[in-house]
Image 1 (tube, rainbow, N blue to C red):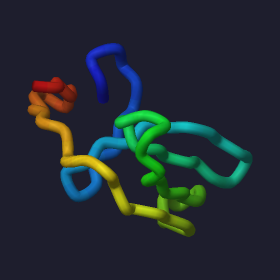
Image 2: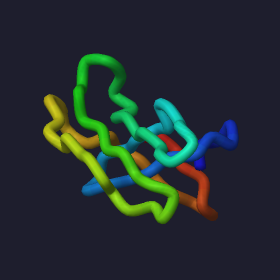
Image 3: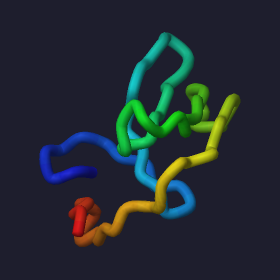
Image 4: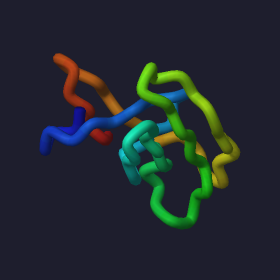
Length: 72
């Protein structure tokens, strides 16, 4: 989680936020913003059903302490 309570996913050192939800899926998008096109979609069982994991930047520097994400 971020300090503001929002969920984050960390995959291969890159961070993702929830970009959209449907009845059966959740879309996660890279936190780097609209510049980076990396994203993935999971179903209700949290299985990845679609992904594009090519980033155009280095992973962010961060620390996770007590389950809370802090950007360094």
